[in-house]
Image 1 (cartoon, helix red, strand yellow):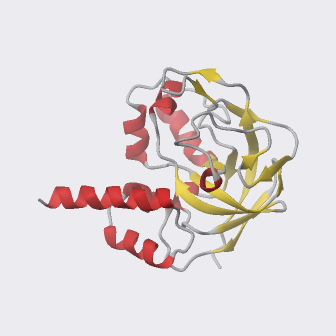
Image 2 (tube, helix red, strand yellow):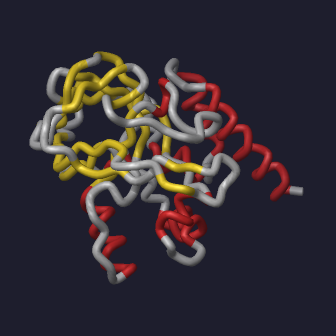
Length: 217
């Protein structure tokens, strides 16, 4: 078993909905830490929600985690303070390279069990929220996406909880590999051996495949 272990620095839920220039007109990306333990259900954290239900949320995007180390690197690059929750994350995690965890791996946090389900794909709403020029392009190039999780065991999570790896799939394909899509053989391995793959991830892999085919012509 991998020795992966870390800690939850903060648990964040929606602070308030904001007006947004996109199609939905509202966004719940403004997430901020709360001081208490938060119940975690199949569709996410109590007190949290999404506005664009067509593209976000659901059981395969129930919880979003981002690494403290990646956040600090962005703060240095952007030369600005990035408060906890700035990435729209539910969990700010210390000690784990969240973007490099294996798809289908399972984390025990408090009395919950979460399963890594997908990378975060940056969108125009995220760019408008940050106010940074070409943010989607820059975030994509860095590929420090953080990870979405599905909830296998409901419970509560609080700041200070230890994160323990309790299941590691043998295929070894990471969130970053799926997001970048550079190696189709690795993504085919993921399709063949990981039973938890969602329809959204399958579509993401199909998009990578079409890109590779187009590039080879």
